[in-house]
Length: 456
Image (tube, rainbow, N blue to C red; front, side, top):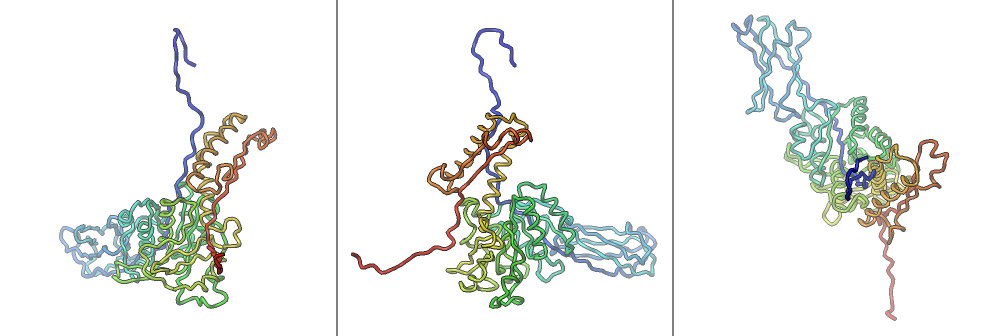
C-alpha cells in the first residue's frame, strides 16, 4: 500500500484482475506431405593419383533444380565394399548452375568407386511456418514432374499452392516418407502449436485415421480428408460406393470428393490432384469474409479447371447423407457443394462442418480468455466477473451474426452462481460455468412451395 503524508487527492492505477475474451484464429492449417526422396547410384571411374596434390580428381555433377532442396543440400554415402573414407569426398555447389559436384580426392588407381547420393529437403518431420508459396518453395522446393523421382512432392506443392490461392494466409508444413510410424512424432509436435485449427495430409488416405484421432484428441481442430483417386477404382453406380469412399464417422473430420484438375507448371499440362489443400484455403477465405459460423460451401475453388468425376444431383443424393461432401461443376464454376462432417446424419448436432468449427472456436476462445481466473478466490465476485466476460464475448458474436436470435437473451445464456458452485464443488477447487449458445444451421435444403393462385 502507498504511504500518504500530505493532504490531497491521489489517483492510483489498479489492475482489474480480468481481461476481455478475444476470439482465436480459425484458419491456420497444418500440412503433412508424404515424399519419397530419390536415391541413385553413380560410378566414378578412372580415378588416378595417390593424393590431391599429384593426382587427377574425379568429379560428378548433379542437377538439383527439380528436387525439393533446401539450400542445395546434398549427401553422399560411399559403397561399403570400397575401403575409402567418406571424408575424402568434397561437395561443391555451383549456385549459378543450380548444380552440385562430388569431388573425389584420393583412392587406389584401379578401383571404381560407387557413390550413393540423395538430396535433402527440410529435415524429415521438421515443421516450417509458411506465409506464402514462395516461402514454401524456399523450404521444400517447387513443383516437380508428377512422375519424377520424388513421389508426393508435387502433391504437397499443389496442396499448399491451392491453400494460398484460395485465401489461406498461414500454414505449417512438414513431410514424412511412406512409413506410417513417422506420423506419430509429427502429430505430437503439432500438439504444441496451439494456433493450428485445420490438419491436412494431401492425397494420403492411410493417414486419415491418424489426423482424425489427433483432431479428436485436441478438440480444437478439424481434419480435411481426400477421397481415393476415383475414376479408375470406384464404380459410383454401385451400391457399396459409400462404404468405399467413407473410411469412418467423425465430427472432427470432413471428406471431399472427387479430385480436381489443375494446371501443373512442371509438366505444362493439366493434372488431377487431391482437393484438400484447396478446401483448406476455402475455409480460410470464408472465415475471413463471413466468419467461422458460415458453412464453407457454395464457394468457388480457385484454380480448379475440371473434376475427375462430374456428379449429378442423383449421384450426390446417395453420398450427402453420409457426409461425403461433393465438389460439383455448377454454372461454369467448380464449387464446394457439401458442408457435412464425415458421417453426416449419424453425427447428430455436429453434422455440419461450420457448427463443429464454431464450437471449436468458442471453446478455445473462452479457454484462452479466462486463464486469469485460475487461483482467484472462488466467491460471488469471481462468478460475476466470469459471467460478465463471457457474456460480453458472446454478445459480440451475436452482433456479428454468429448466433441465432433477435436479442442476446435468445442467442445465449451464461450461468455461474451459487447453484452451479455449491460448497461441495468449491471444496474440490472447482468453479463451474454453464453456457448455452443458439448456433445458426446452414440452409442446406432451400424449399419453395409453388402453387397456382387465382388472384382473388
